[in-house]
Image 1 (cartoon, rainbow, N blue to C red):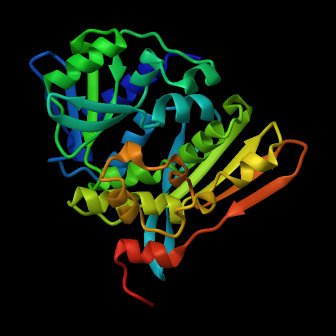
Image 2 (image 1 turned 30 degrees about the horizontal axis):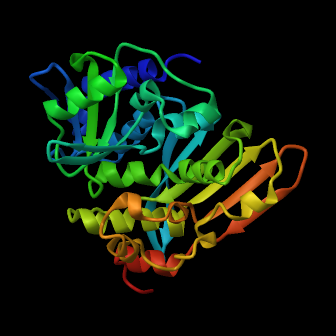
Length: 314
């Protein structure tokens, strides 16, 4: 496979070429690194969010919006499909890089992680990247500066001027859209955590509703995670049968199921990494085993989703 950082840089170039149309604001830092504001101070939008999710998956996934219903009202949903789930979702899209640099706090996802390759998922997927440019998508309520660029460059083994940092807040339009694009990633990661070989997953499709925008980042974290845990639906085509692992993929298998994420997050003292990993799962998953059975586990929870979104009762 070609370098996923090279493919992501091509998509970043597209964002730079159409920055005005997308509502994206690019900045060049003193170090020469490039920050692209998709939704911190910039307006962004759904199309910007789709492109950002495409960057996060290094161009190895197809993304689109559709309309669906929550509590009788129309909402946009984001759908993602990939035939390269282990690389696109585990080795790129997953938010596996915790950024805490000189007072800056954020979560990093994207192909820069594959230049570091320290997470267990890379060995399982059998993929590591080498390239002289890199992209790390940052989820934060503030824009990264030179200290973050230096940190990423050092870890990824590239020049600071070779670092691209597309950034959005969780509660922005782009942030809500990119989070909705993570339903399939959560299912694939849950399977991996349950001991399933990620290279045995042939294709993954997921969808989830786009949570209403709020500039309160704590509330946004609750809404966007509830969109996945109570509204996310995933289809997987796999080679190996594992009934025990399959039934534990959806959020219904978690002890905290039925509790809004805002409450779970508060109990964890607002530390994302202190939340039990089983919480980060889609609501419902359908798994087809090649030349084998089909499994359907979990269910969506529209009532809780509507409450989380602050939707009127119907």
